[in-house]
Each structure stands twice: as structure tokens, then as C-alpha cells.
Image 1 (cartoon, rainbow, N blue to C red):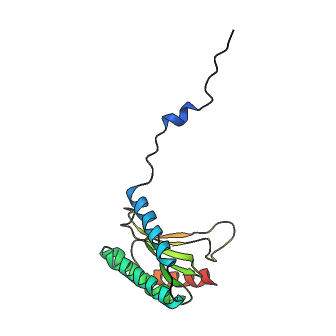
Image 2: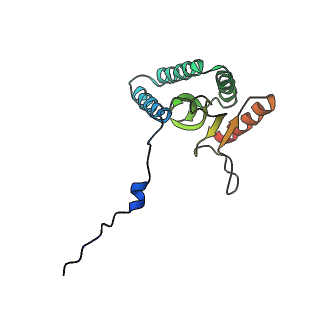
Image 3: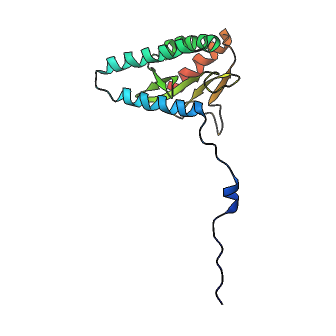
Length: 159
């Protein structure tokens, strides 16, 4: 007698639905592709740096009031406290890099329909503190104390 074989495929996988990326995530990926295309163009390092900062400032100018105000202030604080960082766009967000590698970035609340903006640090940032430390900070507003803390974090991140 012949035995009938059952499929080895899991039926639970078929029960789950995957909606894919959100429209905001797809837009961010498209922006990143454009950023990479722009970065690969020929030109002097100074010209590329100027174009990158101009693109960052234009992106900040497009933001809604509260996000724009925070992003402008963060840009001033970050560039003055760590002039070694190069302003650039990263997935359509303002970011600051060393040798092309992002150290920190700002994500507006509007970009992903969040209730707060975010200041994040990549694994390139020297913020290690034991076995666990924060890599992103929620921002609802920027006070003088917040700005002072950001200066400390950015200086430590590039040290």
C-alpha cells in the first residue's frame, strides 16, 4: 500500500499576513537611494559636502513648525559642538557623519506619524556605558538643559 505524504510546509506561516513596508518606510528607502546616487556623483569633496549640507537644510525647511524648529536648533548645536561631523541626509533625515558613516541623526515626529521626534545615535557613536545604554532619545521640545545634554552626548559620540 502506498502511503500519502503530507506537505512539510507549516500551515501557521500561511495564516499570518504580511503587509510589507508602510508608505513612509518606502518613501524613506527611495530617499536613501537618491542620497546614494547623489553621493556617487563626481566632484570635489568640498562641493559634495556643501551639496550635502544644502540638501539637509532644505529637508529641514520642509518640516512642520515644531519639528523644523527642533531640527534647526539641533543642527546648530551639533555642528558647533562637533565640527568634525559632516551634515548629510540619511533616509531623508538630517544626519551627521564621520568619513561617510552616520554617528547621529534626527527623525521628525511627522516622518513616521510619531508623537515625538527622535535624536538617535548609530553604533559608530562612542556612547558605550557598560552592557546597556540609550541609543535614541525622544524629543518633545528642546530646553537649554536638553541642549547641554546633547552637546555632552555628541562630544562623547565623536571622542
